[in-house]
Amino acid sequence: MSLIFDALLIAAVFFAVHSWQTRNLPIDQPAPATVLALLDGTGIQAAVTTGEVGVVYFFAPWCFYCRHSIGNLD
Image (cartoon, rainbow, N blue to C red; front, side, top):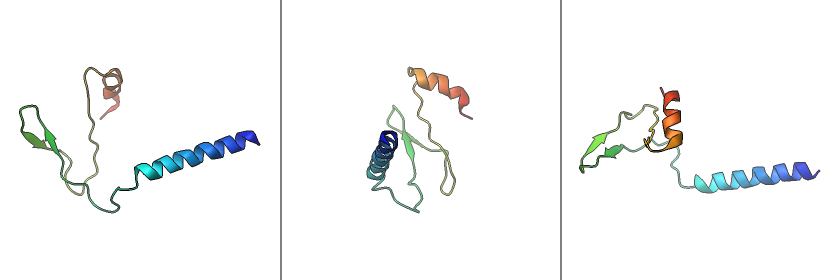
């Protein structure tokens, strides 16, 4: 009985945190245009265009997990 209560409590906490974190996200609206800032102050347009699905992957060469996960990204 205690295990079931613990599982329900953990599920409730995860649901509450998820609901709070996504409370202001727009629904059924396209993402705004993304301009990636460069160090020289200019910017470039992201490769994802309006109406397409895409992933923006931020990579840091000093990050252990980034270096090891880049091989999985296609």
